[in-house]
Length: 251
Ligand SMILES: [Ca+2]
Ligand SMILES: [Ca+2]
Image 1 (cartoon, rainbow, N blue to C red):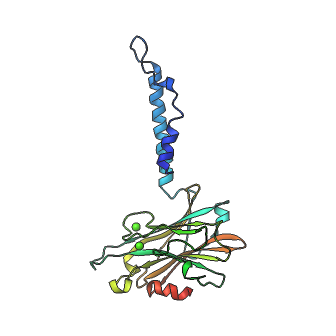
Image 2 (cartoon, rainbow, N blue to C red):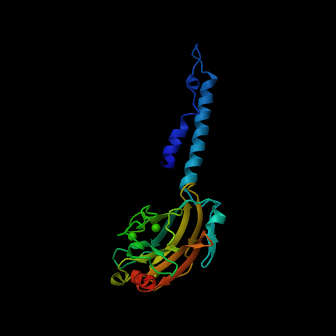
Image 3 (cartoon, protein in one colour):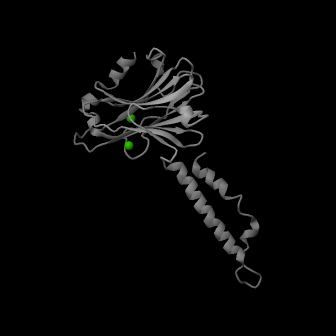
């Protein structure tokens, strides 16, 4: 259910029928009309605040990571069940005349830091992890990255991630970078953020802050298990060689 739908449902219970009598028998206005107007007004304000608390982030609970920082999800969001991992970017104005498509991908690694299998590489052509619960789901390809907010996203159900997965790596690569002569020097506002699926609150984010130039692939962040707890690490490591460089690294 979207925030908007929830709001519509919430609107009704606070309005008893009796409040709709707006006029007295002699035709003069009764005080109850003021009451209903006040109620509607209060409800509007309540809904406005509630709706926008869902749609706009970050809020004060969110933690901003710097490159290289790590944080325990259990510490910042106790009882976290599933995370929505949003990745975003914008393309600077370019005059190459070619379309510019970045792709978010996920590598599910074993304790040896290698891909568990080809099916554990989650990307636009393989949207879900091979476990029966599909604990890791890519939400689909975005071809332009236009606009603010998440451009591509992945949902990870932390309870259902199979025990053989020790690390979940989130990357952004430029599609056909070499052929199109594109690199991360032409990309700005790159970020990865984690949102608690239950509360819809952003719990942490990492904004790329360096100036990159020749890189065509980027490791944004990693979720990894340590002492039975999921932790997030902000990486921000760029690579030349695009997606293939990452596949070589993890195979
Ligand atoms: Ca894409
Ligand atoms: Ca964007």
